[in-house]
Structures are given as C-alpha cells and as structure tokens.
Figure (cartoon, helix red, strand yellow):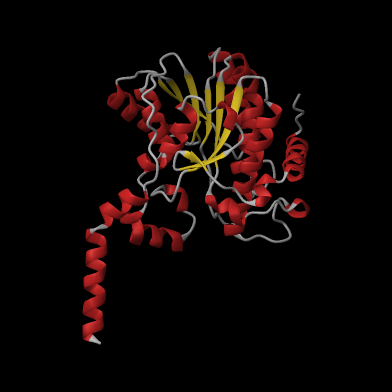
Length: 316
C-alpha cells in the first residue's frame, strides 16, 4: 500500500513538473499575423476579464480603438486602465452592457452608435456557464438568454454600422460543448426540463447556428462572421459550479492561459483572406469540424426566426 501511494505521489509530482511542456503542447494554434489596425473600432463583450480581456489587450496593442462592453463597469475600468498602461494606447474605453437585459443592450447600442461612426470588429465574447436555473430581466432562461439572445440582439442593433464600415467581422465565442447541444424548440426556456450543463451546450450550439445563418444573410455586404472554440481555459466562467472550480484548480497547470485562449478570436478578427470561410467554426486558429446539428440549415433558419419573435425584431 505504501509502495502504491509512493508511486502515485511520484507520478503526480512528475506530471506537475512537466505541466508547462504539456500545456504548451495542448495550447493549440497561435495568431501569426502581424497586422496593425490603427483607426479600426472594436467592440468586445465581457472584456473586463479572461479571454475577452486578453483579446482587448492585443487589439489595443495593434492600434485599435477598443470598447470593453461589460456589466461590471468598475472591473471594466480596472481592466482598461491596465491595458492602456500596458499597450500605451489611450483608446480603450468602457461602456456598460448587461446581456441579461434587453433594455441595457439597446441603451449600449444607442450610446455607441451616437458616439462612433465606424465599427470594424464585433466580438461576442461574454457568456455564462452552468448557472442554476434563473431567468433574465425579459424572462428568458439565463444561459440561452445571455449567450445567444443577448448577442443576437446586440449584433442586430450594430449591424448597420458594421455594413457601413465593411470590410467588417463578427466573431461569436462558442465551445466544443456545442457537440452535446440540441435546440429544443418545445422548451427553449428550460421550463419543462433544465440541466445546467446541457443548457450551456444548447446555448453554444445556438452560437454556431447563429454564425452560420448570419453569414448566409450577409453575403455580398462585406461583413463576415465566425464561430470560435477558445479551448479549455483558466477563466472565471466556471464560477457557478463548485465541482468545476475544484477541477479547474486541480488541473490548472494543464489548461490554456487566457492569452492562449484568445488566439483563435484574434485569428478570426485579424487573419487576411478569411472571407471565404464566413460562417465556419474555428478552433486552434483553424477551421474545424462541427456537429451535424450545427450544420442543419432548417434548424438554423428556424432558430433565427424564433429568436426574432422572442426579441420583437425583424431583420431585413
């Protein structure tokens, strides 16, 4: 028994000792373009922390005017101050945006449109994961409401400015979890059955379907869209799950850093010649496979129409 315990302890020690090399191996692709984007305007949701913050930092470093759109303005200002000091770019701005409240989304869009005449990159980065059952201010199940409907409405409200600024791009953060997702039209708000893990997967599938349908409807406008899986990243998104928080701490040496997790978002925002791949799903800075459900055209169209009905909007 002591021998087995010793062997286990030694193996664990060796595993953690080699963790940096393992993390580097699994870190995936890196955004290799050296493109600078001075004068370009970027909006990133949830960029006060995690992947969004690192994405904002890099785009600011490349000269963009970056809007950090987040619910917690104080955290946003702290992040912006850090990014401004690090990049020497003073054009990092914070604006309040609560994706769980359509009034807040509309107020953000109204303020932004009155302030900016251009928008070149919209990164729908914010999200919630595995939270207990709850509803948004508008009565939507929180994960579906924030991760999908909130960004759907935001994109709708900013689309005119994106078209005017073309070429422009929309990047939607999804997840490999979409593989377990299903669009349950008979119970979109989870009132008949709710499982926090599956609800997250459903919302991430909705992100991929939205990206696909958006690309189809934007053909010829100069605006393209891409869905992104950032990888397994050390971030605050697991805060609603005690089990995941413990697992994240235990296996943190092997997960991507937030900087590594931001690379695919940066690739889709900056890489040249990506326009023919509009609507596609990316991981580790390259196009990758999606589930059959994520390729279902009828589901994508129906989800689009239902989303419009729920939000009371009508796309051209």
